Image (cartoon, rainbow, N blue to C red; front, side, top):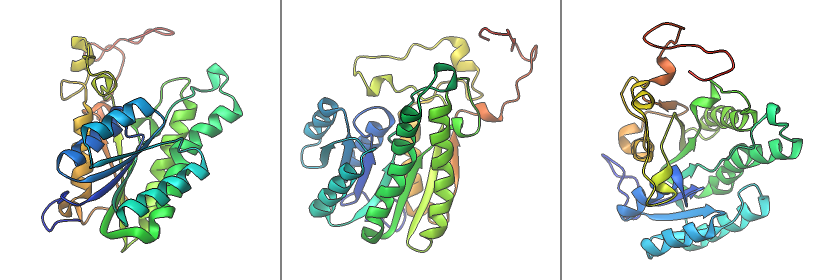
Length: 266
């Protein structure tokens, strides 16, 4: 349940979609490490089962595709059967099928929206009457919701959608559940996919960020924990950008070493 001064995870029930790898796995591990019960849904059965084994008795892994309504129905039913209620829902799952330059098909584009927007809405609705007092929904959006690279339409549209869904849900669920989103920038997730994988970042990769480094999944997990805590009880309907300052930095050709090369890379 939610503590008076911070998130008391001792018997908190946290649901994480896409929680077997990457940012989702880091969030799941963060809660489970503090004794919370964590329900994870993910298509990567091997990674999901390994996570459940590592946190025996604390992590419940459910294999499935969140794009499928029937799968979400079964998952929610199982979560409520096991735990009875939900304190935290983290809608993290998403993917990219690229965009218009790669001729992303109608079906592929729609699939990304089902994973990234429809599933968060539907899962929130399934748990609506089962959230505990002081519960939180955290939607993982992206800085790509408001800035883009070429050929990213499927992912960008999904992240724009979940950002808008956040403030809409925060009003609809006012007084019952707080709903916020987090927009990560460049987060190095490799170590949370392959344990032996280490990030290899050039000096330029790091120093282009005003904070001087690339982000880590722990940066996002820490923010999730804060937004779920009583310390954030006056925050709802908001988006927290965590990108090392990249989206606040104006970039012009010839300024501070930035060079524009048409058709190429910086």
